[in-house]
Length: 257
Image (cartoon, rainbow, N blue to C red; front, side, top):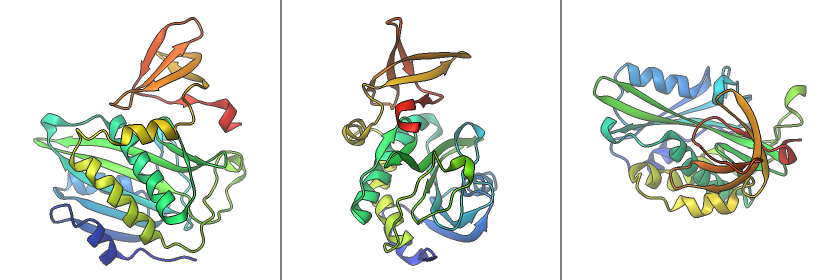
């Protein structure tokens, strides 16, 4: 089922935002890269970019994101006040909750959140989120990029043990994205709203679990303790010292292996 996105339905979902735009691509290098290009060229409005497939999908820390025509690939360009630019970690956490709610609402399937930006189903990654802040002169924006493995997918050999799919064959991509926007827009337009936090914590697959992370070039191990309202992760290393992580990523071997 290779349904295309319905831009008119998505404009309706974006209607709470002032003068939104929707662009749909059969193929593009990366919706996040296109959002950045449009911002640098002067785009100052809310812009939703969607692709049937990406040739250079981007993940965190410079990784690639496998993007065949079986998934949802989108970026939302959202203008913000450069004087009150919110933490990209916080936005990523809020977006994770929005995606989780949308998947549950439209497919009935439940996912877990791995700090900070991945959603897992049946022990495998089915969604990645990349939030980027861009500024030029007196203009600033957030780019929220989301990739969801919606349809049954044949992953490359090096991803088969890591990546998974929701294996949804009936619900349209437009329906999922419309639900996602319904949940995401309130978080973006009201950054002081942390109502996502309880859901993020309850859906977390890392709290109370042994984790490893790299800090100042040193890999450490310990236990994930809590998630703060700005999205930071509190961990205690094996020597008993506390750390507050706002960048980087953690490894949760029990889930990923």
